[in-house]
Length: 441
Image (tube, rainbow, N blue to C red):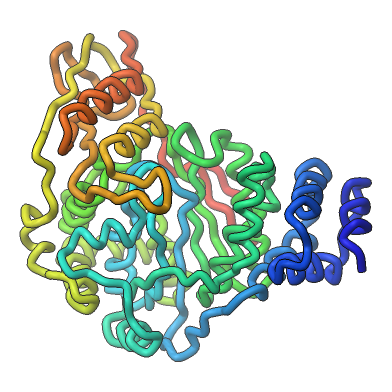
């Protein structure tokens, strides 16, 4: 088998066989195929596309390129959640505890952030002493005992995807549904979950800006999951503005604690209840999403969700007193309101620009080596559809540098569009994708 023939076949619109896909993934992972040939194949796939069978085969080949995590020692149906990423996306810190409190084991592999803000692990490290370093035995025991553990992603998980993504990133071949779907799903499948709930973001702060493309990606990933025996559901959600109000690590942790107390932002609470309901159904703890939602609402109102977060933090070496006293979380030295220049209704907020402002403050990483400042970030006070008076604060900046604070302030002001006419609020849940089809709202 020759790479040249595989490239030419796909360039001419041909369908790659399972053997051809397995060959190029296996040999490229071993370093036996040069980057320039794989770049040529990625460009051919970009233009000629892949069908569902090819996409499923590509996903399986990437899963098999490294280790797969065996979670069979964990009792019950393991349900994983994955978000395609956004600004202010704090869901794991709320979802994990409420789903675990409902009896569904949450065995989560999370990463550190690269870009706007930190990843789930960075946020959890706002709790003094919190660590994701544990043996497989400790991880399994924590899930069996506490119903939840959050570990760090291993480099051995789908290494072919890591190599391919780095190449696609520099050859303008990232934006292809089959390649995106196989990249996400290979890591989720290798992580060992029995079922998967996907949160596919759409809008200005999302990877997929257009709603139609977001549904297409959601459908592709749901099909892949079900094709390889993982019951998979996707929820397509709005990211035309940041989720919740907080953007930045310790600020998002505080917002997660507020949400677990039943005092969080409406959109963040709604998203967690929606995603969590599907996780409970897939995990066999509820017959319907309606029944599941009622269970989760009771868990929040009874304080069981907050108690579960406390258990998680303590089990992984963190100081649980931070859960009851969030003022102990890292705090920035500067708190500066951002004042609206005119009155009117908020028509739009460029979510990605709010994310970039948080990055300027130090809440995210520009490179893998960058140090994150857990204390900095932005708290929004006004969202799309809200009315603002002239001189009223639309946000508050939490910073440790006046220069960075001033730069972030300019970015936030330019991210907001204020108009005189009343504006309709965004619909948060755009639709649900299951193996039976697409339901839009």
